[in-house]
Amino acid sequence: MSINLELKHLSASTINTFIENRPKWFAQKFCGMKFSGSIHTARGHAVEAGIVKWLECGDMTEAVKAAMEEWDDKITGMEDNLEFRQSIAPLIKVGVEGTDDHEGFAELKTQFGKAKTQEKIEVWLDGCDIPIIGYLDFLYGKRVVDNKVTGRSPSSLSQGYILQGSIYRKATGLPVYFLFEVANKKPTVKIFKLTDEEYEFGLNLATQAARAIQYILDSPIDGALMKAFMFPDPAAGFGDEQKTVIESLGYKL
Image 1 (tube, one colour):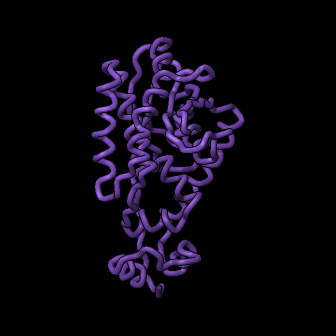
Image 2 (spheres, helix red, strand yellow):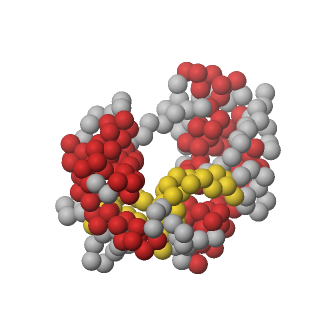
């Protein structure tokens, strides 16, 4: 028995998962497994919601209120974390105001005017018939800004962010910046611009991965392929329903 996997589109996060954790990618896309979010992700969504609200109304109180509503929604089913909860308002504040070394969203608004948020992009990579779809955090007339919240101050962009930024630049033709709110004891901001060298590397990496996914989509999925993807621990995290599907392909867990 074999099954063909169908995907209507890819995303930067899908491609990054394929590169970094192929068993997880396969479990998500083939077996329909859902992976719960984390408090780190929840905080990132909350801070971004607060910044978006501030850009709309210019009121920090309303911004924090919107952020906390987002936090409460995103942590549904998870244990609340007081440290993370209390860090949200200071992170919004520093993200808006910036620091002496790095501009914040208030300065970006002054320079470039109103930003579009969650602007949809769609792009095709060479040799791949499936489009990549994404949503830009902030699109100004002359730049794309992706907002990130992190617990450690980054010294450079990670491979995953380089790939994401390269897709955004390919789609828009605009320079891409990453603005990090860093949750230190004293929150700070760091900004990185995707360089030309990073763009070439990230686009090449995304293209290779997208072509590999395209090959999988065009191939029947059988037990041997499942085994290759699920190594070294194919049974971890699977429920009875997923195990039944996998074993129906001839691969015993």
